[in-house]
Length: 254
Image (cartoon, rainbow, N blue to C red; front, side, top):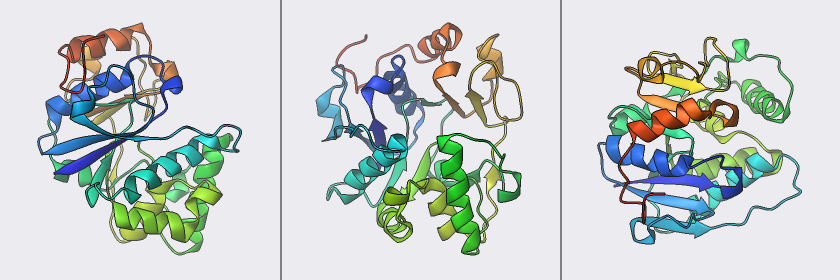
């Protein structure tokens, strides 16, 4: 049995993303798992089918999103009933094909340190800061912030957060974890053969426009994710058709 951890802040949800993410993992996770939600609990959730840790987001903190994500991670990892190894999911990640635990555990990355774009913004500042610390310590500093399901060990994750001061310094836990514990491994680099990302009307090496025939665009892919700009009516219609039936995690269909 492996726990699946969803950090969830309901007011940042644009639609019913969590509902459809849960439908997707019920359909495609081919191993025993339990779902934990940390943060807000939607009214449609069937409480008999999930584990819940309440957490109210603290407002007014610099770089609040990362601070909140790490706080929820620690609440999950410090809970005595959570499994030693766990999967971190987000509500805007969906499974399109069957996967095993070994599939999820594959070390994946976006690109090496040398190819990190020089972009501005809070998240990019956090990425550069995180990878810079890793590089100075002699690690390869792969960007592993793939926004895909990730398999972690909770004791190792707690150690990473403590040793690097990830909460206080607003560092990105995935890149800290995989570079530190797998320094000699070459990751599977993100590509459109196994994952598709909708981040607005963009077509490049990483992102795909959310317009057009999404059945064709998603054909053969294992993972799908998006941001708020990528969640248009076309993508919503695709997800509603792809995951038509309610999951056991729902009290009723919305």
